[in-house]
Length: 151
Image (cartoon, rainbow, N blue to C red; front, top):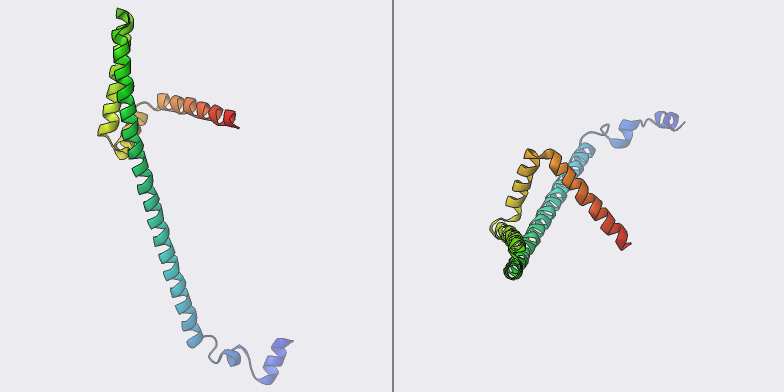
């Protein structure tokens, strides 16, 4: 019925918009689309920057913890070596071997940053996929039990 009134009054769609929706109205839509595209680009750039910043912060915290853990390993290795000196021969050898492994772990942590450690882990997973899967299952199980016991 509205269409009939428009026809009777001599105004169709073209009459309402002047040139059938082209021209000025079309450029307005194009400029709106351009603005929306620019806003989306800006938002994407901001999100990318925030993600990169969070990644840097996480890496910094990991590196900070890495140094602390290495120091703790050093202390533990020294304590085991000292107590191993006071124990019987077989027990002493086992204590010294354990202390040497802990010292090696401390040295590794001190010498490698988080990125290098991740590359080493990826290499181990590629070389030993079955063992890596089993280790992940054990760690997941233990983490689940720990979280469940905290509830």
